[in-house]
Image 1: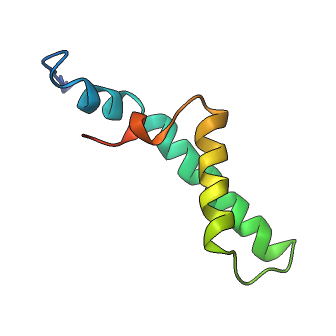
Image 2: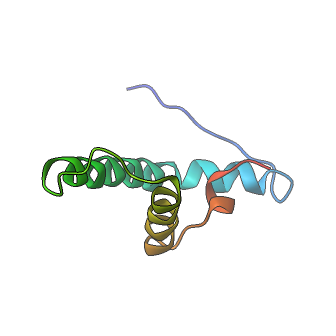
Length: 75
């Protein structure tokens, strides 16, 4: 079995570590966002979602998982 080991020099690479540590949560948010958009299209009969509404939805999803943009962006 192969292994991959990620190493970070903390605290200098703290933002990189946070982004990698939260990657699975971010992938789940993207899946949930896709499902929400599918629901909007299929069950709510919406062909379009406004930019502001979409940004708010992403922000809410991040907040609901205890994350923020700072947790997923390398600085």
